[in-house]
Amino acid sequence: MSDLSPTPGQTVGPFFAYALPFDGGADLVPAGHPRAIRLHGTVYDGTGAPVPDALVELWQADEDGWVPQVEGSRARDGWTFTGFGRAPVDDNGRYSFTTLRPGATDDGRTPFFAVTVFARGLLHRLFTRAYLPLDDEEAAADPLLSRLPQDRRGTLVTRRDGQGFAFDIRLQGPGETVFLDFGDG
Amino acid sequence: MPVPPLTDPDSAAASQAEIDAEIAAISKEYETSGASGRVETQPRRDYAPYRSSLLRHPTKDLQHADPETVELLAPVFGRRDVAGFESDLTIQGGGEPVGERIVVTGRVLDGMGRPVRHQLVEIWQANSAGRYIHKRDQHPAPVDPNFTGVGRMLTDGEGRYSFTTIKPGPYPWKNHHNAWRPAHIHFSLFGTDFTQRLVTQMYFPGDPLFALDPIYQSIVDPAARARLVASYDHDVTRHEWATGYTWDIVLTGSRRTPIEEESA
Image (cartoon, rainbow over all chains, first blue to last red; front, side, top):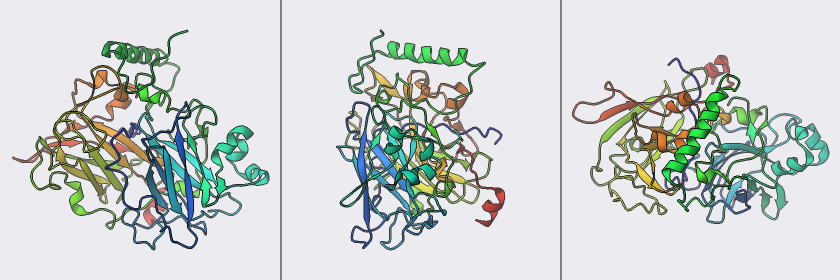
């Protein structure tokens, strides 16, 4: 095949709910796991209204900073941490993962959850990061956060709450989430 | 000030002619910027003819980020995750689904042309009458009890996938008055890197609805959008059984070096 231009994306559309979500998709560890935490939030549109037909995917290291390379995300055995999760939002735009706190993958790096967002109306997936709460010094040391204006940096940082970490995703408008381009189109 | 288009995706307010004019204007603007502008290989997220995009696209530029370790790896799927029969969408009910049986096959490659091996491919689609098995699909076309329209499989050692299914029908939607989607199959793909994640749609050659469809036309570059159209392939067609289509998928470039690839 001579043409190696990338195949374009298209919207996930409105009818993915019976195809992409799977049992246990949002539970990277069982809820009863002694160190389970919650990563949750709401997806909003440009008017601040919840988006009821979005899909959020999570990809992350384990607590020790190792990135799993093991099968079993779609058929969880309750014991193996695969690092991947998939959660459709509910009618109020909310998603929720049960997972582990990610560790730093490299010395001196700030841990984050890698997040992908799909939705009806969104023509091509969006990548972002959900960082664990951090102080200004840590943010200044991070290659991405340090380049962001103060008022936008906060959109990538989770808020600690009673069960774990909250991370809202704003596709547009005030507080629009910083979305990422990895330089390859 | 121009009047902003209605943002209620269910208003179906505009006519096809109005949508056509919007599509043509954007297309012309892209063509005339051709000499100086770069080729757009992906859809525009901000594409007003697709009304649902109006409030769901970022208005700020994407922020460049150098991928870190977690983003240089992708989830791994294996035989535990996918059953063998899931690549045949025609055997999941109690009998044969209605419609034109087809085989859709191709390879998943990275931007260097290397096969994406043993990785998950997921598909979903309408039935031959243009109806999805989804509670929100209110199109008054028949549900086929023998067709769910969902399939998945792992690519083989050469990055190849092959699904047996039924050719989906076009269906109406509420973007504008008398709006119809060209027949398509939704594809979800993973690469070797997180950054290669792709969800897209595969179309069938010669569909008369291409020019009218704002989702397809959101890829403003004609050569780029043509990459979503499968080819009829008589070598894939099976004697007295199914017609065949070939569609290769190229993900964005993997940063993995050939040496890492071999030792992986």
